[in-house]
Image (cartoon, rainbow over all chains, first blue to last red; front, side):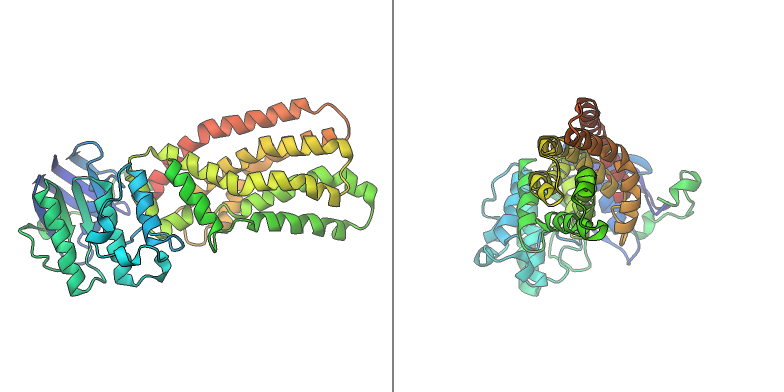
Length: 204
Length: 218
């Protein structure tokens, strides 16, 4: 299990926003992305997750190794907490296990997701990571709308994941208390911003 | 795959899911037509098959923009794309769920509504069979249209404009099969062509829909 990225360029809206991204993430390692708004953190994570093709460069990870948590939680409002999580567990062909307990949601299991608070929805969205069983977590601002206790809870979950041989790439402004290197966005920002792929690409 | 199908079916029967919406719309259209064209039962009998087909088609259209838009809004479409399922399979399952929620109930209800329009007796089996064979094409083509407009705000009207022309062959052969059946003429040829449209679009369009989704999610 290893994520190896070499000389990656990513585009957003037809413009190159990141150039020359190279990083290696081994089992047990975490890396924090740091940079101002609009510096391309989400674009980098979406590219690594396979949601958009890279403009140049290589991404090497095992098959089905990566899971991505965007700032949207992917919850269905009319399904209960347990049904939401069971769905993702069945999609990934894995048991739900103790994911509800670990994200402190076991008391809310039969409540519809629409009746949860923003922080509780977030915790449910993050519990999905546990049922995917995938080793590499790409997290985009995972602590938004979490209170201090939930941030600590989530940090403990990430630490356990790393201890179990997982890896995480986290875009965050909060110090999760992880032993993680920081990847600054400024040096990899594209210097000469040019539209790529000709005229049409700018409209896609 | 099955998990996704069951989730979509479950969501459709929960509050705000839209199950029965298309059916109610179909019922209303069928009731409104005799009010509009006047109380001439001979005229009703002549136009019944066509009206029922147009009603079914419009009822199908009504729920198309929900296929991907809701999943895109709450972020689950992104997560499904990264799940261990081929995107073509996801699209096909979505189309199947749409047909089970919309096309199949319309097909089952159509013979009952045929009574309202004074459909000739020997037209019922042909109406039922033509809808059974033709509505899957409506769902699959509609799913393609829905994939094209993912990410657009208020894309519903654009979706109708994109999809309605694509529905023309299905409508022509479907209504023709039902009409010829009602008139007591042999209707196997339009029915076979209708089946070919359904089979062809079910085989090919999921690939096009998946590609459209990939481009729209960038």
